[in-house]
Length: 473
Image: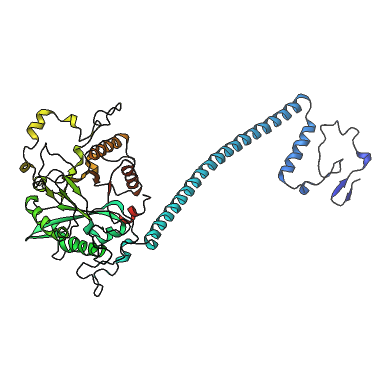
């Protein structure tokens, strides 16, 4: 007789089968069950129910069938685990590749940010140097203002150059400065340039005809200011009565080179240049050549551009102006050195590329054939000789003579050209000057300046007075 105790059903032991464990045909039910079991509704999940059902069916199976089923289950589980393992390893591989990709992206973005930060910092430092650095022209802020004494462009403070150290630089296109002549002197330049044009029997200063003005003449911008500067540097007192002090107080013996670039016809313009130099000449301030000897004075006048060499050298016993000779014709090898007996191959100035027949047909035979041909050529012939008695500078365009600079540095062939030209000019007693120097980038410009100074170039042709004044000379 069955009794109910709570949620379980109890069967009388007298009614229990003799060998329950070996009876495979016993049917379990809620009403006639010889075991104390948990009701089906108390299982937590369907998976538990299935596990229980499989377990009961395993009890009913015998022999090889039970072994086969168990092997089949294990095989299915193994295959399932293998699939999960392969799938997991694929995920890990993708996660690994994704990690490298993220690192590359993050590294690239970080590098760009750091580069942008450095460039911004560099720009700020450059701007700071312009804002807080000492400007050369800050001493001349009142130039030209009413009541400053500069209305006539002839004012000059007595202590203007007392702390200025002369440096071997040439103020290229000096008339472009805020204050022509004085800005260059304040920077320490020992050479200035003036482009002159002859119109209506007057010499005007400017880069082209569009920039000419009636009040900007050769005398007002250069001759008269130099007279007043030198009068203050050479006062007539009880202690001094001379004319040999130059414009620089630190080095009174340093001459100032006045490079006059003739833009109009040389034969017509040059006599007017000599005439307007008379105020400096009559005071004994112009360097001159007399009877085969050169005498250096506070101002040395050099003619370039269309200055005619034949007119300048017409007087063989006296002259107080000198020529700007062609440097490209003066290249010389280092005698006795192996491998340097020929001109560098590929140079536009290679004399070996010109045959004797072409020389006789193309070269001019008289100075009239070369009038107004530009720097170093006007009024010359193939037989013209350039010496310290008739010339002061030997100049050439840097780009045309040396060539274009690649990768920001001069190559060995270009340096060899510079050395040969410097060697030839110095052997003739002339000072070397390269014009048309690269101005940008600043690193390349400074490299060219450094090489030229190291190779013996006597004067740097510059536009940036502030930059050249900061070089460690």
